[in-house]
Length: 415
Image (tube, rainbow, N blue to C red):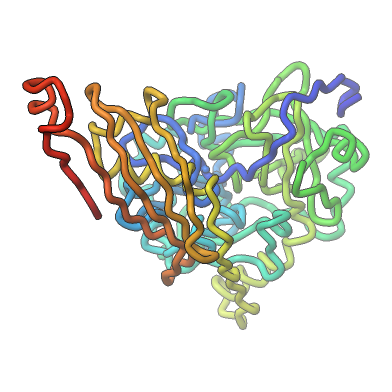
């Protein structure tokens, strides 16, 4: 039995960070991140005026493609909460780029004091001057999955009250938990929208979380995480784009306290699987240190930077990257992603960090084929993928005239 006494039917065994819904520029649907890993919000949530949750912040980051010379800019969105006039709390994986390092400040825009992002005036958006991540953050298991955005100017939004170390009792099994954000309103794929939404879930016990595989392959760690379940009445759960948003408990005296930071959910945002949140009571001391430093001029805490590691390039990685890179390079002539004709074959390892493969697809009745190469590299933002190709196709006019290929010129395009 799940939290609240309901029976939970397991659908998916895969879990991913809510990753700030990664969007390829110009598209209206979410796409898997080139490195990750991700906006109405909260599956089955209700549209919520900002006056009801005045601390909520919408976070957007725009960066060059993870694939150098082979992809459009990446736009990712997350949710956060204002915890001081110049400080926004969000998820650690929202401030760490798919490349592995901290995101650049110039790519961020943060909106406060507004529910519908479409109608937000420029005055509601803030720039970011610093990006911080908590020491001890581990993206592999989402340990201490929290980060801070330091705004260039103070905002008028009401700061959120954070759970303190002595308030672990607020995480008792069965406690109603309000979640909110600008993530998907239904299971992916979902169209991008803009109003803030919220809904109610219920906190599960450690036994519930472990029984229903919260955290999945990453594992579940009650010392810095807790999980929550959809209720039969609300059927709400967090989804991609809600990352970094709050889990809020309302105390008996009516005081709202943020007890969690939304961290991860099942890939398909199923309402019958638990969501995982980072415990605020175990990280609020770090937030308080930075509030004291930024707002009151106290000494700054130790600063942490993620370690950039370069994994082994694999055929699966090429299959994931190649459609994005080729679609950007060949535009309308690349139809393989839509019609299923795109194939990757005969891959050869180029050391640990590179791979070369044959690729082919069909466009306008013609076969396009050649070789692509991918190599991991690094920039000041961390890990990237360098991409090159050599693709051949026949002259279509010649083929129609002579009804054969021997007399027709092969056109080669390379990069």
